[in-house]
Image (cartoon, rainbow, N blue to C red; front, top):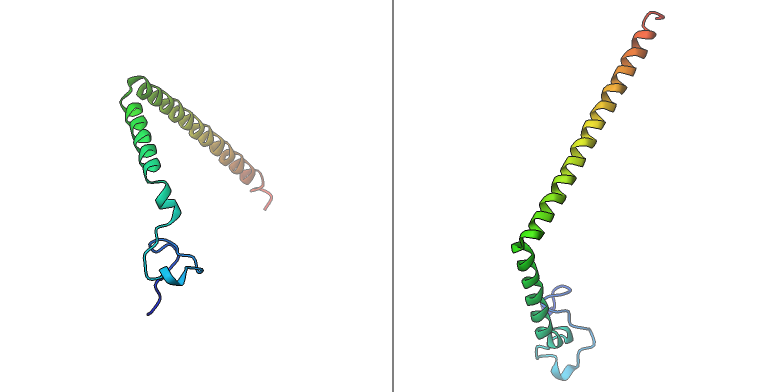
Length: 103
């Protein structure tokens, strides 16, 4: 197999219009050249923000409170659904028994 680029994105997508004089050399993409320091700094800032939030007691309490409220709401909705199902079953049983004598 003489294909230099076996699939799109391996390791970086090379355009089809590569200069024949530099075709043998590995070219870095513009994305990789420009953004190495920027991406490192953004990653470091994002990591610091996540670490701060995860160690902040107020944030942890807020997340716990929100989770409790959400779980309580889900439980209440499940109970309501169970009640509706029981009502529907009771109605079906009533109509079955109502027409049973006519057959």
